[in-house]
Image (cartoon, rainbow, N blue to C red; front, top):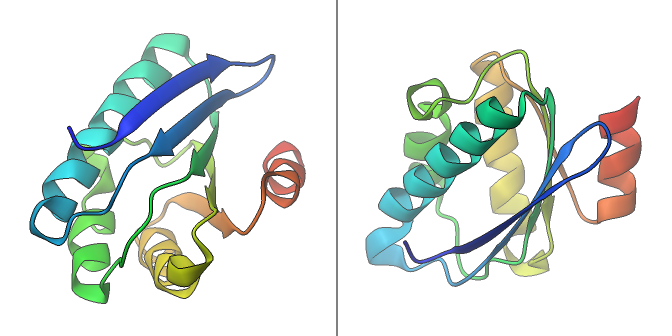
Length: 125
């Protein structure tokens, strides 16, 4: 897997930190693997709130966003989870916001945010 993923269980949520480069040739495969790992750990911990802080860099093309986010359920992500996704790579922020729209249109409770503070407020309300 191209991404490094760190998990930290907090009182009422699972915090996930992701770092690495979004390699064009492996973007879909790497993202699917990351979502599967996040889903497996979260099911184990029995959390319904997930805070993902992404330090991943690189482009996030619309087609790839569609392929990844239309299939979240196939990776084990549950529609009753509330997921706050912090995209710290400002160069790809608008692309990742499109991914949010795709996931929400598929019935997932997912928001994309520019910083952790805003994401936490949304997640904990």
